Length: 82
Image 1: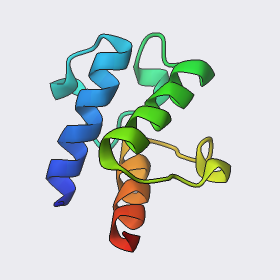
Image 2: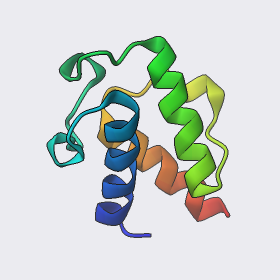
Image 3: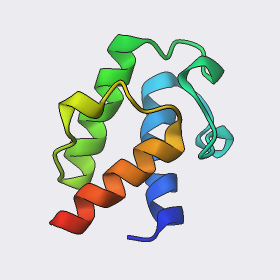
């Protein structure tokens, strides 16, 4: 899966969970940029990314992500292992 495709897939998940336009989600988007993105919704986003991409993200990295780009990179890394 290409980086752009993965970004769009993750942006769609974020959009659905947080009721925002996925087109507004970029690699630079942070939780502070999106109303309602708190620790609970962050965990729900991570779980949905895992489910839809059929991967397991390292739990110890869940809260180390600084922006959506970091999540895309982490997901890409896990996809490469599959």
